[in-house]
Length: 294
Length: 337
Image (cartoon, rainbow over all chains, first blue to last red; front, side):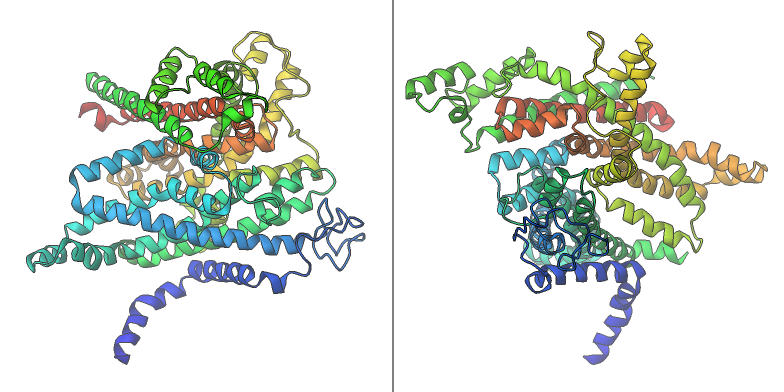
C-alpha cells in the first residue's frame, strides 16, 4: 500500500507540483483563497464605514496619507484596502461555484454527446454553434436583464454562457477515448453504458477537466467584475471589485490610484488561475509531455 | 474556383439559418423574463384598458409565438420597434451607433495585428532558449488582463498621470459632419479636414489599444505554435538548404503558412473582441452600440436591448462568414477539394 502511494506520488503528482507555473499559480490562488476566507480578520477597517472627514486620501506612504488607511480612501472615505480584501469574497464565491456549475453541466453534456453520438450529439452541438455567435459579454448581460440582479443569478449566467467551453473541448476528447481498447474491453465485459461513461471515459478526460476548471475560475471572476461594474451584479452595499471600479471611475481625475487597487486584485486572481491551468495542462497532458521529451 | 463558390454558398445558407435561430433565442430570452416593461411606460394612474391598448400597439398581446411573428416580420422590413426610453425607432439609433463601434473594432484589430505579428515572431525566436520561460510568464500575465481593465489602466496612465491622449467620447465637441457614411475617420478624410481627423483618431487610440492589448496575447500564442510547427516541415528545410537566409525563411516562407491558423483564430475570437467593445465604450464614453446596450439595460428598454443584441450576433456571424470565405480562398488545399 505504502509503496503504491509512493510510486503514484513519484510518477504523477511530483512532476505536476514541481512545474514552476503550477508552483507560482498555486501560490497566488492559495493567497487569494486565504484572503477571501480570512477577510474579516485581515481587513483593518469595516469596508462600508464612511469617514467623510477623510475622503480621497492617498496611500499611507505619501505625505497626506494616514496610517489608518494603508491604501487611502475612496470618494466616501471608505478604506480602499479593506474594500479590496472584502471584495475578494464575492470574486472567490463566484469563481468556485460558477466554475463548478459550468464544469458539471458542460462535462455531463459532453460525455453524453460524445459517447451516445447520433441525434443527441447533433442537437447539443448545434446549440453550441448558436451560443458561440453571441459575444459572451452581451449574452451574460442579456441573461442578467432576464434573470434579475443578484449573486446567484451572476453564477447562473456564467454557467449558462460558458458551459460551451467545457462541452467543446471535453467532447472532442471523449470521441478519442471512446475508441480506446479499454473501452471496447469494457463493452465486451458487458458493463452498462453508465458504468463505462463514469468509470472508463470520465477518468481519461479528468486531467483536461481540471485544467479547464482552473481557467474557468479566472473567467468567472472577470465576468462578475464586468457585471458588477455596470451595476448588474450585487446590491450596492456588498463590496465587489467591479463596484469599486465603478465608484472609482467618478473620481478618476482626483484619485486614479483608487482604481488601480481593484485592477490589481482582479489581475492577481486571474493570473493565478491562468498560470495554474497552464502548468496543469503541460504536466497532465501525456501528449504534451512526449513532445517536450523530443 | 467553382468549388469555392459552392462551399461559400453552403456556408451562406448555414449562416442564414443560424441568424434565424438566433433571432428566436434573442426574442424568447427577453420575453420569458419577469421584468415588467409595460409598467415603466405607463403612468401610475393607467387602467387595465390602457395597458391592454399599449400591449396591442407594441405587438405584445396574444401568444408568445404570435408576438414573435409580429416582431420578425417587422425586423425583416427593418423595423425593430421603438425605443421605450428614447422614443425613437431602434433601427435609427442602431444606424447612428454602429459605425463608431465598427470603426473602433477595425482600428483595434489593426493594432492587435501590429502587436501580435512581431510578438509571435519574437516568441518563436525565443523558443527553447532560457529566456522563453520569462517570456511565457509575461504572456500569461498579459492574457490575464481583460480589455476593460486595460482601458482603466490606460486612462489612469495616459489620460490622468501623463495627460497626452484624450479618453472621453469620439472627438472634442460634437462631430460637424452631416451626411456621409457615419464613419468619422472616412468622412473627415474625404473632406480633407486634417485637424478634425487627427482629433477623432487620437480619441480612438486609447480604447482601440485597450482592446488590442487584450486580444493580441491570444493571437501571439497561436502564431508562435504554428510557427514552431512549420519550422520542421520539409519545404522550410529545403529553403534553408538552398541557402536562403534564416530571416527570409522566417518572414517569407514560414509566416505565410502560419498565417492560416491565425486567421481562423481571429475569426473564432472576433466575438470576444467585439464583445469587449461594449465595456470599452462605457469606460471611454464612446457613442457606439455597446454604450447603447448598457443604457438600454439600465432603462429596461426591451426593444432596444433586443435590437442591439441582434446586431451584435449578426456582426459576429458576418465576420465568421467572411473569415471562412477568406480561408477557403487563401488555402489552396480547399480550393481543389
